[in-house]
Picture: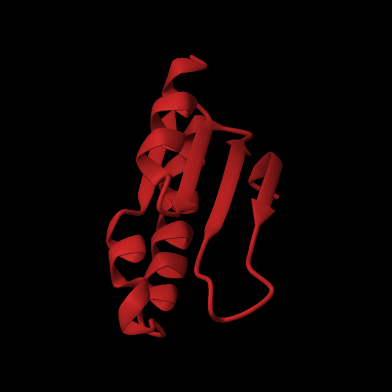
Length: 88
């Protein structure tokens, strides 16, 4: 109920931890609440890593810009964050 819109992509198999989400928060006052949930999710993912996925996990990004939030666990997270920021 705190989000106006969102889009989330999750892996279908545990051999991949790539997760990408873009969230539009209805009220900027609720951004921290959404960030708390995102950081909890990132922590949950971090508890079930294969050693080969640690670098991908460590390169994750959570970026806010106004009412928008990007959450990316991906080898391309830095590129995604740059592209996300260039939209504003």
